[in-house]
Image (cartoon, helix red, strand yellow):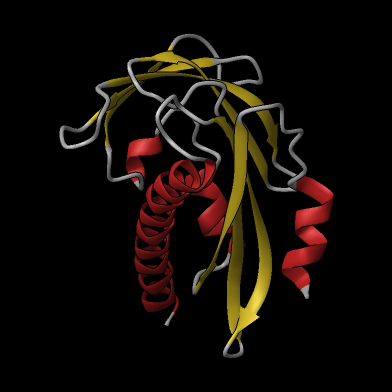
Length: 175
């Protein structure tokens, strides 16, 4: 199973006491180059993440860069400060750590990987996003993982929608 291979290679998190970890897998009917072009944009998460209203990054986009994210209303947060921990264009790996903000996701760190695959005879993409985070006081690990998984599922569904629309436009131009 491809997912297990990629999980072992790129999605190992070291859990400390009072932390939880999980992962979400999404198959997208768009080529890996289209999906990666969106995922790798640390400076433009709002291109596919529905809860992001605005993002600013000072300086060049490189490992160590920090972005200030404004979150749309409806979530229990308004801002998040996030650092780019890993950006590998060859292996299609992006790692992000939350370093501030008014949310409850303390010591949150995520890795997202993008892998080519065939879906119904067409180029597609396997996306895996995993995370580790502190369990907030008053919550269980299961509750925390369920909340974060729901956010990631929403983001990956939006990533699929945007990527698949871009792929359809590319196919129609090529025809």
